[in-house]
Length: 209
Image (cartoon, rainbow, N blue to C red):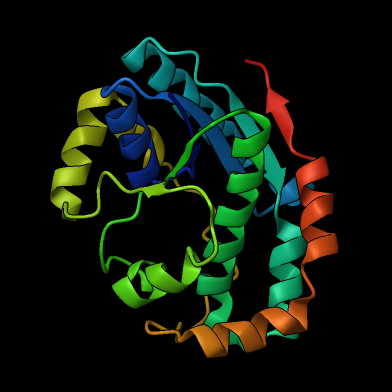
């Protein structure tokens, strides 16, 4: 069975991809690029992480990259800043869902660990995945950072994931940790996202290593 895994350059999502692949899931990797041509270092690290995952699992693990930075700018310009992380994650899941449909995948995988960051509180997780038709698999949800790091070190992605890279420039000072459905609806209505999302989805590219 195929699933699309949201893959960053961090420690958690490569571990999640590995765990699901080790259970027989055919994993398709999707990286959301927050920098574009302004900084390609993160994408280069993600490519190397994908290579390590292929060696560790023996799977094909195709890597796709979506140009996400312009939509991040749209969120920042039109929405309350404290909603940035939750909106970002919600639309990442929607884009992953669209890729999953085109690739005949049956689920989405994330590296969420409960409460680790603002987008991973239980309330925010509920709001972020609302309306998705595909299940979201979270193999790390009950693990702490030390346990996740141990997996990353075992499979060989840890060293790459601690490479010094520019941090996410969109993280607000005080991100909301408990967003209601109504407040999310208000913020989403400001974005009018459908056209923008179609543009992102049409420009998703597969990276051949």
